[in-house]
Amino acid sequence: MKKRLIYVCMAIGLVVTGAGSCAQAPKGQQEWAIALHGGAGRANNLTPEREAMYKVHLTEALEVGKAILIDGGDALDAVEAVVRYLEDCPMFNAGHGAVATAEGRHELDAAVMDGRDLKAGAIAGVTDIKNPISTARMVMERTPHVLLIGTGASSFAKENGAEIVPNEYFSTPARMEQIQRIREQREKESPMGTVGCVALDSKGNLAAATSTGGMSGKMWGRVGDVPIIGAGTYANNHTVAISGTGHGELWIRQVVAHQVSALMEYRGLSVQEAANEVIWNKIDKMEGSGGGIICVDKRGEVALVFNTEMMHRAWAKASGEWGVGSEGVELSEKER
Image (tube, rainbow, N blue to C red; front, top):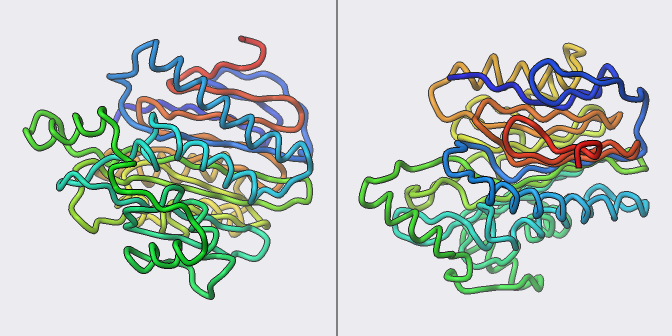
């Protein structure tokens, strides 16, 4: 797989965007930090016009999270609000705009984790919950469980006041055209596409949230890494918050998100070193489509690493640094 190493590194006081370009940045603990992603994959359909649209929505989502953190709000509230925005945007594979199964229906997964106490909530295979990420948080806060699936998760959502919609709500013309191409074997099934957000708040708490429609053309009942805590979603105040996007089966087999945290905790790696190790030395060596991860550690250092052609992403820190991008070069404040 051709390597495209694109990341932001704060661990040693450097901002890095692209291969080998560095600029000095302030060291030390950040009051808050946030990163988000809108999926990773191929860039063959990413026209300049579509890329510009993605940047608009990524920036708007970033502002949603920043506003909460700047006001002293909780990381958990920030990541949920950002993911809800992305779920409502038809350009991303989550909520309205989710990919379809081989049967042409939509089955959604989501997870959230609170780094303060390692509590987590997740739902999988739901077909009628407008904003799965908020129901995942309800599972965490209102039940003794971590993961609810299918009709049980939907019943729980209804009982707790979540907005319920018909399955057709999640459809868009683009997604219906996509599943038709897959059926006609003009396009391969794609494991790519997820949205997620990680954040550190001013109280020192980390949180992670991830939501997805899963793999386009997937088998009925297939569940990927997103709702599997430690695979696609993880947060621990002692180390880092991580959200992943990519080939879910690989993420599950490598326990990607927890592996980043473990490398930091047990081997003393920086967030950048740990993220690089997992993506380049674990995921990249496996058969599959790869993907990426976004990370914010306990000091507010940010790492964004992917081995695909592109990853829709945005990030910001209390210091005023920020960036947004899809392919190799991010649009930073100085470049706008």
